[in-house]
Length: 121
Image 1 (cartoon, rainbow, N blue to C red):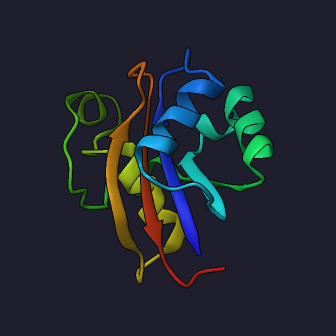
Image 2 (cartoon, rainbow, N blue to C red):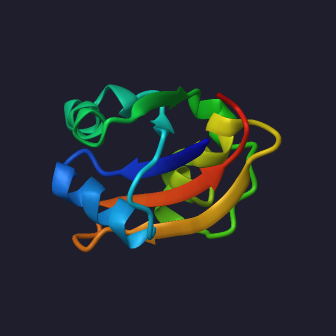
């Protein structure tokens, strides 16, 4: 299973999310994941429908326990993790998750995406 984890600003658009996914170098994913409060964002929900992916909602406290490859000061300040995108992708798949692509940033800098793979279904 391939999961794209996302971090994004509230003003991000579907184009922002598409750009971040494109920058990650993946065309298709099984699911997209983000922090629980962000998973209810209408743009995120529409994006999931557009690409045909399930949404995985991650409890915010769970994000803080995951070691990330990249470090964003904004993520650290607001979410107490180095990368919401990486943490969400890994958390969605559990213990056997492997990061395939670290955090990439959308062209407009409104969204980030990281790709993980695991056997959770």
